[in-house]
Structures are given as C-alpha cells and as structure tokens.
Length: 180
Image: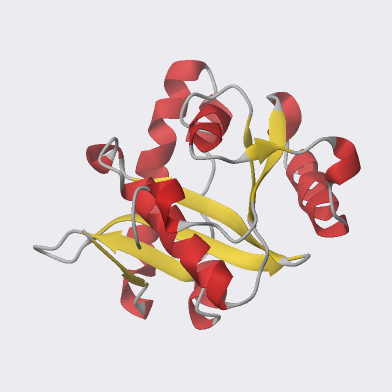
C-alpha cells in the first residue's frame, strides 16, 4: 500500500470509495448515513489542489482503496473525512492515512489532528480513541470546531451522538505503528 496525493482523474473513484464505506452504517440502523452523498467533485478538487487530499493505493494497480481530506482549523489539521473501502478494512489503511496526515501536520507546524465523528460507531470514536485521540468537551472546542459541529447539526448528523476528538502534541509516528 502506498499513500500519495490524489490525482485529478480519480476523484470519481474517491466518491465510489465513500459510497462503499458508507454501506456498513446500514447495519447499525443509520440508513441516512449509508445513503448520504459523497463530497462533490468540486469539493474534492478544492482539497486536492490545496495538497490535502491523499489516497491509499494498492501497490499492484495503484487504485485508491481509501482517501483522507483535511484542512487547517484553528492551528490543527482537521480531518474532514477518512473513508476506507470495506474490501480494504482491517488492514491498517485508515491508520496509514492518519499517520500521513499527522506527518504533514508536523511539517506544517500544526499542533494536532482533530476530527468529528460518531461517538458510538465502533469504527469511529472507539477506533480513534485506540489511536490516542481524546474526546473534547464543549469548553475545549475552538471557534472552527464549533462552526464545523454547527454545520454537521444543520445537515442532520446530530440524530446520532457525535464528538470532536483531538490527537496532540506533534503526533509521533509510533502512535500509528511506525513512520508514514
């Protein structure tokens, strides 16, 4: 597996990864999440042009197995989305993408990784907690995280418990099992 910047022509494939990654939510009674549209091509392109859209690709055919998009928010690199195709699940693909994002955050002088996620979905908050992320309480939310949470609430995501999480200070590669 190789982590690399997304290529312009593979953005539709990232949407396919997102759709496939959503299907397990159906088993949890979260059909709206399973059926939610992936990020639009212009949104993915904005992240790609900014150098903040990375894919995990199979060594053999170089096809994306997963992707991560992120942007700086209040001094941290905020992981907007990380999606792994179910066929590549439980192989460390998401962990490798997060390690890459952590490395990039360090290079850019950002203090942490942040994300928002579902509190009770096993491959969401509990997974990130195992990687060392901690849940932020309301008093710790930065203005940017408050804005993100408000946008999520407006989109209907608060139907299920959500949390903001943070991993700091400059994230060590050991957190994710080795260098990225």
